[in-house]
Structure formats: structure tokens, C-alpha cells
Amino acid sequence: MTKVMVVDDEIDVRKMLDLMMKNEGYNTEMAEDGSDFLEKVDSFNPDIVTLDVMMPGPTTVEILEKLKKKKSKPKVILLTVVRFDGDEKKIFEQGNVVDYIKKPFDIDVLMDAVKKHE
Amino acid sequence: MDKTSEKDRINEMIDAVMKVARGDFSVQIERSGRNDDLDSLAVGINMMINDIEGDITERKETEELLKKSEEEFRMIAENIHIGLYYTDVHGNFLYGNDASAEIIGVPKEEVIGKNGKYLLDLQCISKKDYLKAVKLLTLVKLGKKAGPEEFHITRKDGTKRIVEIRVQKIKVNKKTVILGIIEDLTEKKKAEEKIKEQNIQLKKLDELKTSFLNVTSHELRTPMTSIKGYVQMLLNQNLGGISDEQKQGLDVILRNTNRLDSLIQDILDVSRLESGTLKFIPKKTDVDTLVGQTVETMQASADRKEITINADIEKDVPGLMVDELRIKQVMTNLLNNAIKFSPDGTIINVKARKEKNDILFEVQDFGRGIPKDKQDKVFETFYQVDSGEDRKFGGAGLGLAVSKGIVVSHGGRIWVESREGKGSTFSFTLPLKPVKDLEERFKAVDMFGLEKTEEEEND
Image (cartoon, rainbow over all chains, first blue to last red; front, side, top):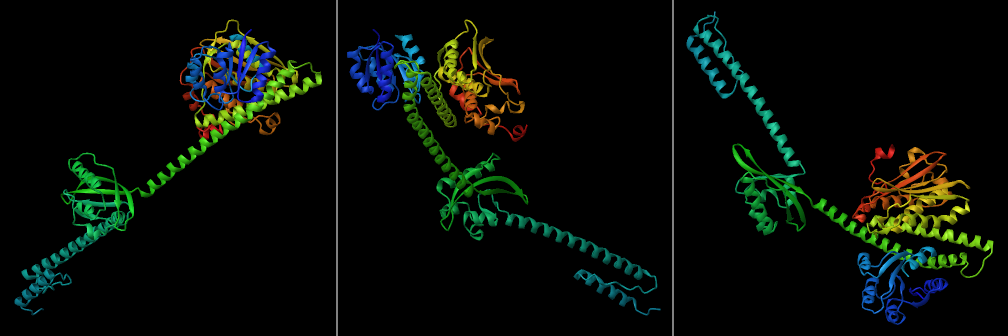
């Protein structure tokens, strides 16, 4: 079963995304920020990560750089409200990023993206 | 018969000539009536006296005129608010007008006759500026372009002035002198400094505004993410079955959430445009998906007015390298307007096809149309065709302006064809060959109609 990890500092959004993924039949895990995500990623070993942009703690670039050193190699879909924190070119150079979606989002758009990369 | 002796007559003539020599031209020699040589001499002397008197009067008049005109020039030089002075070729002051003395803050009498170095001794100018003056003098003597140069003056009373001096070599009475013109820039510089400071303040304010808008929009959109997400889940019946009434209520919530979201987006974009911080992230984009997803997003709004959206995408239309979200934003804007201004139960046609080196997008409605004279203006910020009427339809008048900015940044064009009462077709193109420097292009877009001249404005 495809494993999706939901990373968002907003508990309502995090739980909602988790519910959406479960509804589609995915195996899910949640993380409340970048550090939490990096701690859990190898044990859960997700196929796909929805990663919020602009969370407290490490920046998106920092998270993605550290992710490269992990055993787990998930595809990353960025979820962003005010587009990007820091240099977006650098964010996309990290390689793991396969898509980005603007919040608030259409469920269909998000699910299309997840399905495309599962 | 005159009995005057010849000797007396000769003495009379000598007296007259002597008077004339002293400048008295009132004398005239009387003739004896004998018509002899002495009478002829008398006539000659009288004529000579008259001629000389005439000449001298004329000369006096000319002298007076000259004196007057010289005085006039002196008055001009003295009273003009530009500092004028001249030195000899060694830099010794020969003349300075009142303004020049006022500017450097040293009395004329003190300076005239002295060398320029005296101003250094007075600490009126710095060593550096003194050397600059010496260089000016050297250059101008060689007939080269000299100045204008800036000098910092410390006046005797301690006040400071910034002046600009230009010098020129001229001949006065066959003597070469160096004429200097001093312009006091102190006030101008002060004003410039003030403007600079104000600009810095304005920039700070602008940054503050941008960061405020960023934070605010983040804070507004985070709760909207949960609202929109759950409403969609409820509508999709992911969380259990719902009644028709519940569905209607949720549709309204979703529609209005989308409306709020697009308003926040527009406000943010306008502020980014102002500050030149709008960013584009081009990626490979499928035209069919792009149009399909946009239409899907707008379906609920269209359904409410029983409007049918016909999407006609050319088969095998090539993909584009564009910022997908931004292009969706343009499509959404156009569709949103089309729905807003379409009567209930009508049709909206959305088309996309390849045309030469572009993809052409069209959104056609059968609404009230736009008057010809207002068709260009709809792409300007805060412009609404009819403020009163449009208020009723909602919208801040930002959408089309932002859309234009986005399309032009991608190297495309956007325009409208419309007939009043028949409807409007909004079209835009995007080049198949992606352009570079999208942000730079965006900055160049005159979204506020600021670069228009008044004439154009009145057209």
C-alpha cells in the first residue's frame, strides 16, 4: 500500500490532509514540522510526502537537504500558502520535489498530484 | 565806420582763441565790416569755434552713454545672484561681485588683490579643494574643458556651503583673465538629501507593507485551507451522506471561500508588483489539464446561474513551459468575469488551440459586453467598466490587471473583443518557446496606467 506522510504545523490542516489520504486508501503518518518529519521519515519510509512550506524550525531548503542524507527517498509535493520561503530555484534543485500546490487547494488537484506520483 | 585799430582787432582774436583753448565756446569775434583779411580771419575763427564746440558736445554725449552702459553692466554683475569673479592667469583675484563674496563668506575688499591660496589660509576651502582649483586653473589656461567642479566652502561665520564652479578663459582689455562662475548648490543638495531620506523611508514603509500583506495573507489562508478542505470532503460525501439542502449550503460556503481566496491573491499580487517581488516558477504544463481543472473549479459558480461552460481544447495541443498556477489564475479570472456578467442560462465557450508559435486561449461569454472606449481600460488596476453596476457584481478591479501582468511576463498578449449587448471574448496567447526573465518583464508592465500621457488618458 502506498505510504503518504503529511507534514504541516497547523494541526487542523494536518489532520484534514491525513483524513483525505486515508479516505483514498493510503497508509499515513503525520509530522508537525521539519524536525519531526526528519526524525520519523526513515522509520515510516513514505512513498510520498506532502510538505508544508514555511513552518517553524528548519526552512524548506534545509529540510530537503537533510532529507537527501536519509535512507528513505520519498517524492515531495510542496503545499504552500504564500509560495516559498527562501530561494525557490534552490528548493526545486533538491530533486525530490515533484510538484507544488497552492493552499487553499482543490481536493481533486491534490489527489491528482498524489496519484500521479504514487 | 569802425575805428578799431588792426592791433586791437588782432588782440580781440587772440583773446577769443585763448578762451576757446580754456573750453569757453561762448565767444564770437565781431567783424569790422571792412571786408579785409582780418574780417575773413574772424569768420574762419568763428566757424572753427562752432565746429569744435559741436565735436566736444558729441564726444561728451558718447562718453556719458558709455559710462551709463558700463554702470549698467556693473550693476548687473553686482546684483546678479550668481557669483562672478575673475583672476589673472596666476589666480590672483581682480574682481568679485557681491554674490561671490556672500557665497564664500569673505568680504570682497579682503580678497581682491590676493591669490586664491588666501582662501586656503583662511580655511575657507580644504587643501584637497584648493588643489582642485589649481587644477581647474591649469586646465583652463591650456584651453581645455575645466569644470564644473564641486567645492565645499566653510564661511567665516562657520556655516558651510556646497558650490559648483565653472571657469573660462577670456580677454579683457587685451589681458587674459580667468572668469569664474560660482553657483550655490547648498539648498539644492539639502533638498536632494531630503528626497533621498524620504525615499529610504518610503522603501521601508513599502517593505513593511509587503511583509504585513504576506503575513496577513498567510494568516487568512491557513484557516481557509481547513474550511475549503472540509467543505469539499463533505460535498464529496467522504464524511457521510448529505441532503440537497446541506449540499446547497456547502456550495455557497465553497464558492465564497474561493472568492475570498482570489481576492487575497489579487491584493498580494498587486503589492508584489509594486515592490517588484513577484516570482514565477515555470514548469511543464499540459494545456488540457490546465483548462480542465480551471473549468472544474468554476463549475459550482456556473451551475448556480445554470450557465453551461463548453471547453473546446484542440487535440494534441502541445504543452507549455509556464507557471501553471499563474496561468490558472488568469483563466480563473477570465472565467469568473464571464460567469459574473453572463445572464442566467447562457453559454460560455472556452477554447485553446495552437496558432503559429503560440497557444491561443479564448473565453467567450454572451453577456452585456464592454463599450469600445472602455475595452483597453479594463486591464488597468482598480478599473471597472461601470463602478456602480460592477459593485453589485463584486470584485476589486484587480483581476484583469494582474492577469495582464502575468500573460505579458510570459511573453504573451491579452486583449478583448466585445460588442455591447452581444458579449465579450477575452483572448490571450502564450508562446510555445518559453521566455526568460519573467520577473523583469512583469516589472515593466504598466498595470496602473501610470505611464500614459494625459492625451492618451483623454482619448
